[in-house]
Image (cartoon, rainbow, N blue to C red; front, side):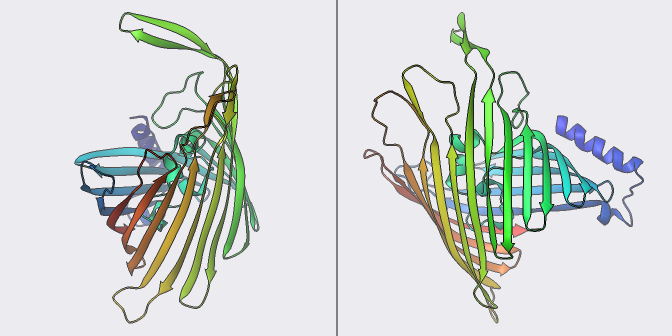
Length: 362
């Protein structure tokens, strides 16, 4: 509701600024995003359902108040196993202070983790890297309400941001995480990008109500705590020839334990890394404009907080993604691929999911 009111306010400001819905409307308003639909076949034993059809749409509505100020509202629609949801995920204003410095305020993506911050319409697989679905990543990354500065000096970009810890669709209170995030990006050539930075979160001392049963509860005091996450990645899009590019992406994340200290316990940070390798081939005299085979190997190790001397659990896992991207046109892609899960635990069997999907960018 609050984002709907924000959108109405944005439209009202544009109206007062003299914008109209004729003639120059295309210069004032813009719509972009992507739509995808796919059949997903689950490989886990006795999975119910065995397969499903799903659909997804992301649409960004961009409004330009003047040459230096613009606003954006991003929405997503999901159709999952017969259930549909529509959500407003992004709502922010962006202002160019000077050509080298801009400021963003509202709800938007935290500058932590390329796997999450990369464009959804440009993914080489059906899904983002598995790390984006872990608690360790969600403690530091995702979307939040905040303010960010972006500076760009030639090949060097710097992002510094503060978030108030409300998270998506959550009201702020004194027990919520507050977060600082920074990112340094260096692009020495057109085909190479190197980036990395920290994110710091924490909570003040606060009281929480623990419900024992419907008739009784207790109030406990949670000690203050802080944690630091570190993320670094490298992106390569190297031209092998006039019609072929070599694609490589590598990322490492370390997520500090998000919680207070306990007596006689030892914290261990969660870690994750992945490497993506593929080749993009342009085609001539074919019904396809290009093809791109690509694979991604990912290793995940969750955070722990164990009693001193306790044996660490076998809870690591690896994820292998593979996909063949068939480009009908530059904006229409057929994706044929799958995801394999392997587990360190001896009592957990690995499995492979398969999918056939279509994506259209607009």
